[in-house]
Image 1 (cartoon, rainbow over the protein chains, first blue to last red):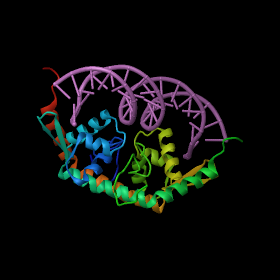
Image 2: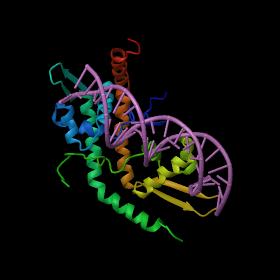
Image 3: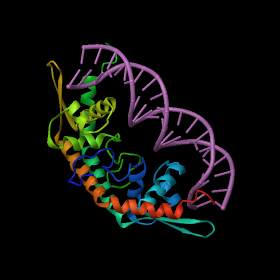
Length: 122
Length: 122
DNA sequence: CTGTATCCCGAGAGATACTG
DNA sequence: CAGTATCTCTCGGGATACAG
């Protein structure tokens, strides 16, 4: 494997993991600090429980998020970003900012492209 | 829609588009400048033609890539990054660099997690 | 409250064959 | 060379039901 600076991103090693639909959303949600499961869930619109717990488990497994469970009744689990997770957050922020800045430009490009290209009927 | 700085990324507006498996790979490939279809294809390992042309079309549609076709025989099509595309490239680079820096840490975290968690048999 | 276990479904990936 | 057209198949998303 070459270690040159950013040469051939064969496959998806471009990112450490292939992020799921919700991965970055979770990371951004945890910006303000500790959050509980259902708290996250509420703040993320209609995330299915399954998707959220899968996402959280992956993030925990990869060392981006900590999970702290309290053996109380009812149970309580806190999620938080690790140092590494906060680095991901800054990257996500960059993407988010870029998206916000250029949303209109992209939509305009899309309209233009579609206008020229679209040929439903002959 | 709120326009506050990076608040609730409802859904996937976090990114402008949901990138396909190959989107960022193409962008990074075009770092050095103009490239032709099969040239891209060769440099990207085993990308199916379909996936590549789909990816390229989307990138073109969204204004990240220009497509220049020459009516020669045999045909020739050049792909290149737009200004916007080069911005995406810098973002992709950041991710890539991060991935390279922390690949080992993540793999280590994964091993640790799996060692503690994995319980195939009782 | 915080999950796991199922089931279903559509989207995307990939292989293959064919066309301008 | 540069694609399009099909087909298959897997994976992830989403809904629902159940458990600790």
